[in-house]
Length: 116
Length: 113
Image 1 (cartoon, rainbow over the protein chains, first blue to last red):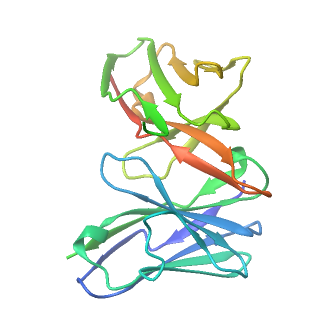
Image 2 (cartoon, rainbow over the protein chains, first blue to last red):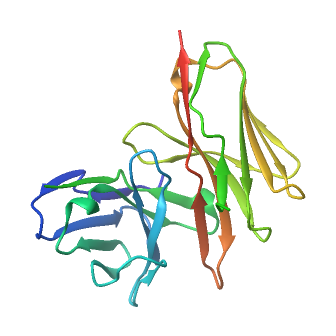
Image 3 (cartoon, rainbow over the protein chains, first blue to last red):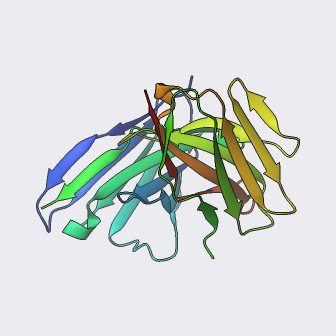
């Protein structure tokens, strides 16, 4: 079945540094990828929709200059957390569709970011 | 009102018990509905879709009441391996070929031996 690969699975960084997270669709082309964030004991919150070849669409309250999204190819989207702070520590998950409807939505394994 | 609201839980049940999860959603234009399962520190995985006519997959039964904007999941004869967080998910069409999934906060289930 379709697989979405996300790297790194875990990262610890110092406050003020930037962290890049990669999301790859391994056996299908994904014109759209989604980035979610999940704080402990909270629901997954959609941060942005990444569109291949165009600008990402950010959800209300998500700073586009802080969370940079690049979707340069049909199989790769990256999320860069710039100038990370401890409050950015969270579980970040990407997902991609290989068709229509949520049953075709495949999630990456997630990245646990800890900012010290 | 939260877009997707679930039982706060957690639920602790013995093996073999029947457990029911409830969920309500606020957007009456929501298109489709799902239950996902999420294990601790893992990505969510699709458990089953929810159809208006109700649907069953083995020990799992899902139901949807569009008039009440209510979704349910019933697990019969629960197993230890059913222990996880169950997420109610609503899919909304947001234009063109775009859909947006909204996740509930999840309900933690622990099945005890």
